[in-house]
Image (tube, rainbow, N blue to C red; front, side):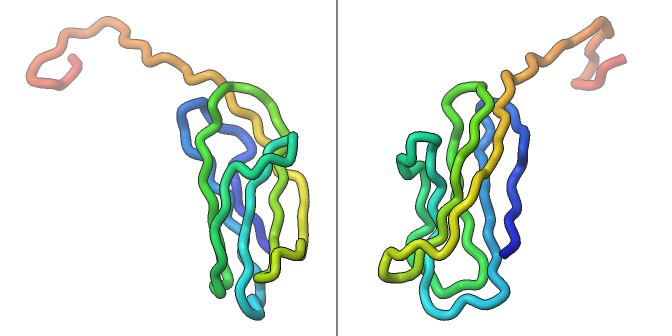
Length: 105
């Protein structure tokens, strides 16, 4: 199994979890679960070697989500923690300068 996901991101950004299997015998699905086990995202059944799910975190906080892989009958193949720190977005700051034709001088 190969997992790809950001461990830290700003609030307002979409979280993407990608799981790749060396072999995908038959159909399988990927789910992203909240700390309370609620399903946040589901890839749906596919016979692809790689699946992804996306989710928009609603608030800035540190959490440990769960990734769950299921076979076509709904049996859990694998499950494990996905640590994620969602940070407050840093506001843009403009300092000095004269703007002319869209170019700062």
